[in-house]
Each structure stands twice: as C-alpha cells, then as structure tokens.
Length: 283
Image (cartoon, rainbow, N blue to C red; front, side):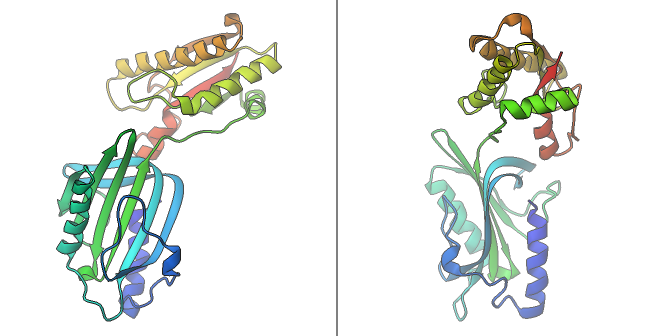
C-alpha cells in the first residue's frame, strides 16, 4: 500500500473540480477507524481496510514501518461548513493520542530523511494499551479542506499453510519458507504460530520416510553474529516443538544462518519481513 499514490490521485482530482464530491462514496459506509474520530464538519469521502500490510510513518528522526491491519480514511469539509486549519487538525488528533495514553512522535514538518510524500505538516502518534499497539498518521492538505488518516493496528502476519502444501513444496523445490512468529529478539514460538508447527508434525507423521532440516533466517538489522545465534535458537525452538509432537529426533535437524541467505532486498520493511523466516528443507 502506498501513501503517496493515494495522495497524488486525490490531488489530481482536487485540482480539476475543487474537491467537491471527490471519490464519492456513501459516508455511512466509511466509519471512522479504531482509536480516533473525524473532525467536526468533515465527511469521509474515501477509505479502505486491509487485513495485513506494511505502512511507513514519519517520526521525528526519519521514518519507520509498521505491519498489521490497516485503516485508511480521507475526510473533506462538508459543503458550506467552516473548515479547520492544518494546525487545528493536527492538534485535534495529537490531543486524542495523548488523552488515550499514547505519545506523539511527530507534529509538524516531517524530517528531511522521511521519504513519504505529503502536502505539508503531519502528525504521527503511537498508542499502547496492554498487549495492543496502534500507530496513527494524520496528513492535512489543501489548507484544511481535506485530510487523510492512517491507522495501523500492529500485529504479526499469521501464515496459514497445510501439511499438504508443505509436502508439495518440498517435493517440487526441496524447501519451503515458513513465517513463524517470534517476539523481537526472542526464540520462543508465539501461540499464533503453533498451528504451523502442528502442520509440520502432521506432515512428518503422514510421511514416515521424510527427513527435514529446520533452518532459521533473519533480516540484516543488528549484529550479524547475534542474528545468527538468534536464528539458530529459533530453529531449535521449532525443532523442539516438532519432537514434542511425537516425531523422532533423528528425522529433524536445526541450523541458523542469520542474514547470510536473504530471499528479498533488505532495503525496505517488506523485503526484511520476507527474510525473517524459518525454512523447512528436505534432506
């Protein structure tokens, strides 16, 4: 998903018709995203909800990417209503973030090293409540006539892969990349990835002659040696779960390669996410 693309398409229409009735959608179908509500006298004219994506946010010292469920809304001043200034819009949302116990990471001009295209000033906020975490971006445009809100409810991608799909990939390619979730810097398999480990167990129980290697991989962020140690610990955690599921230890080995074997470019978060994986390799 691309913030800049959304802005360019909207501004092109605004330049022609003055932002009246742009991208007309039923306002009732565009409810406000979680955590924040629209400004008074503004109506939603476009929006989208995406189950999982990676979105970049400008912060005081640059930018950061956040993965999870994405809500995008664009609001426009209602006909005949008094518009708010860019500053009013930003302050309204930054106050809402603080009232919710969150912190404002940017309010004003974005730093020079933020690559996100926008009309001018912006607000980025982060709200943590218990185990949940949300990131919010607000970007006013056209002197307050319209503005865009992005909300990302942070979460890890949950991969659904069956034992049959694993077997097909192993027979065809000799390996399969599995996106098993771990907490940052830790090696314990998270509960939301237990089903993937269960499918490995089912695969091996159904194919008694199959032997595999569990291989851990990371992106290139951080110390290379520490990444290698972490990737091996994660591979061993998966291996332990497989053995606990009743698979003979002689059929499964574990290894960690850190960032040595990327399958995507580490320059952006989308590529780094692909590189953070556990591979099942046919022996």
